[in-house]
Length: 228
Image (cartoon, rainbow, N blue to C red; front, top):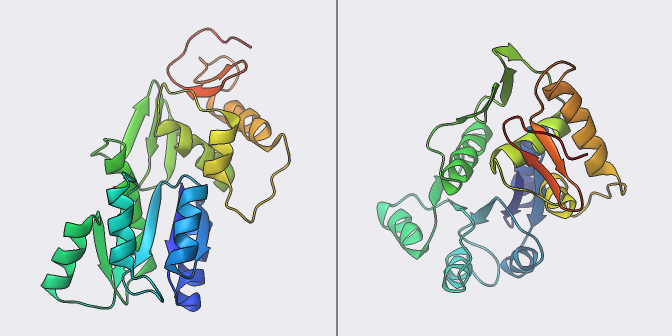
């Protein structure tokens, strides 16, 4: 997933970003509402972690502007305020979930996973595509009941495609989800990642699942004739 953390505490922001990066996510960071708002304009995110109290414009005001402008990216609101009234206010403005400080990084990751799952219309954490089963919560992959060992980058690519089964994603769309703004991937990075993932998902003698659409991009779906 491509995530954005908008939090003025550098220590908290970088700690959370590192934890989510270790789980295979591409994470961008912003320390103010102004910086975060600009990043939302520049990039597409699967979910945003937004601090309630920011220097300058506060988180609720920023979130309200996003919703008024039609931005529907899932937002998890962070706050040190524990009252019911505060939580209700945040949800009313447009937050999709709420997490009070201090919090466990494992809970943050789990809540973001649940948010993105719901945004893609999936109530279950598991997705099945032909013989392939992906468990987003456990970050596990099985084909015909046997585990498939993937690197963090390969899993991130698979997750990006599996959340949109049957949908063609261009190289540019995939790159946006795999890399944050500080990464500098080589020109063939996506193609190389697809090649590596395809070898592991579809060993010789098995039906293909990861297809190339020449001039368009890639799609994950049940076996069909390859066009490459």
